[in-house]
Amino acid sequence: MLPKRDLELTRIPIDDLDQVLEIERLCFSQPWTLDNFLAEFERPYAVILGLYQDRRLTAQCFSWLLPPEGYLLSLAVRPDLQGRGLARRLLESWLTLCRRADVVSMRLEASAVNVPALRLYRSLGFRRTGLRRRYYADGTDAVLMTLDLEPGPPARP
Image (tube, rainbow, N blue to C red; front, side, top):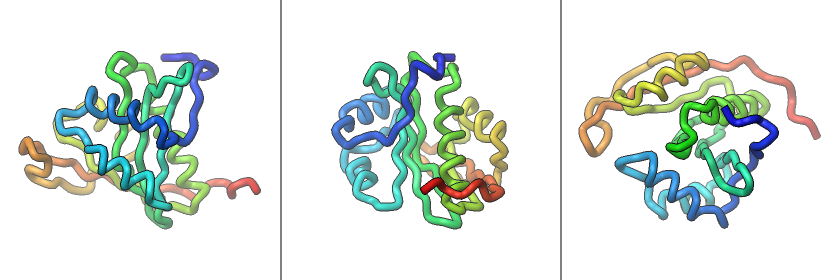
């Protein structure tokens, strides 16, 4: 695990879109397109978080906050840094934001063959709520997962 002091959690600026695309291409066989990401940067309800180390984007999380629900759209960690707790750290930060925004139900879908991701989501309390057969272009199923949240402390002014 990378020391927390070496990582900066922040909103990803659109200027770092080249790094976002690089991580996406490294992590997914069917990556999002430039247009997909540009659309997310335009959505007022999109939450786009990143973990940086020395100004290098190491992990990214794209989500929507639409209280009372939140949706995890994409989560990726540079392959050379996977297994070090970065995805968990991003997700825990995202869940904190959700609680502060009065989100009570979180939803996501994950590839049925992405065992590490499914294990991580289950460890954070997500439960399987459905299955979309052959959802992805390669014919892989998508597992639908939900997490019910307790409200958190109010946002600080």
